[in-house]
Image 1 (cartoon, rainbow over the protein chains, first blue to last red):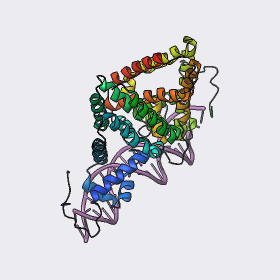
Image 2: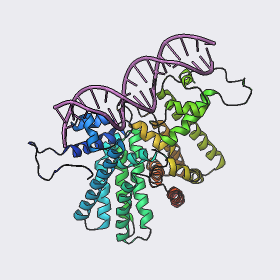
Image 3: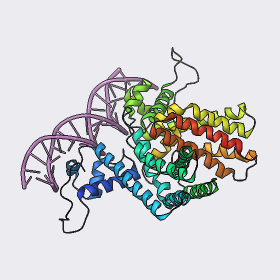
Length: 200
Length: 200
DNA sequence: GTCTATAAAACGATAGAC
DNA sequence: GTCTATCGTTTTATAGAC
């Protein structure tokens, strides 16, 4: 959004995404797999097939790229949640479907952790005074869950949303630490039963 | 344990802990606050009041110091759990007391995250093929909780232990990400009520 | 707009005097 | 055992040619 050429009409011969998009996409994956600290600009540039020095034409600093990564995650998460709303009418079905989506990523989560959680945790340790750059990411998930619980008719929708997201994030930490994908999948199923058993 | 002089009889004038202990202690705090990647050997040495180059007399590599940090956390956690067992007879009281201990650290957790969880998450991203160096740390907590749930007479003690630790770790991630100590404290109280309500 | 070459700083680790 | 000085590498970032 800050600096980009006219990407409206595809100019290149191959229909490959623009360099900026390729950089952000590569950064998303590398940051998820290696963490922010271990991901160098050289890695990102190589993965995106862009010359190293050229990265600074699109992003002024490494922090800017990480910001773009957070933003991209936010967009993807919002579109995922929007699709869940289209696909399922009842709030319970939507929440259970969300658990299903997260369970599908059990293998990736066991290997690299939750993309939002690990990113948030790492960014929270950066430059003490800094703002929690990744907080909005977690807030999207919390707000959506709270909205569903409220639609069920629960007064403590806020607490329930925190409990749901907590249990998911905690399962991701454990699953990742112990290297056990089944742990995440199993907890997701327990959460689905928990949602089912909620008095509506 | 690897390399140390005769620390049995205090030789120094002031009764200050040995250099190795000071280094590990400083590393524990700095790693918790800044993460492994951002904590440099220079930081650790300065905080421990030990000359930079001298660190390598006590630890062959930075990875070795992190290993010592994990080990120190493990020792401290085990002694905390042992004290909980001495102080409380019933398993439910022990589990609730553990939640109390964790709730007391809400401020620190909101600022820096759970010491075990954030360390585990960061180490899980290091050198893909490497073993989960911090897994034993989480396992200590899981095993102890499972033991308590089994003493209550619950068959699904394993699942309950995972749920308990998951909810704690998840609350820590959220509390840290959003910068809200009350979130952690509130979830700890919810967990205490959950333990109370368990059929025994 | 795109890319190469390189500056500048930070960090882990070592050599060797005391 | 203790400490200083420093090497070699990595990494962010910039200058400037095309």
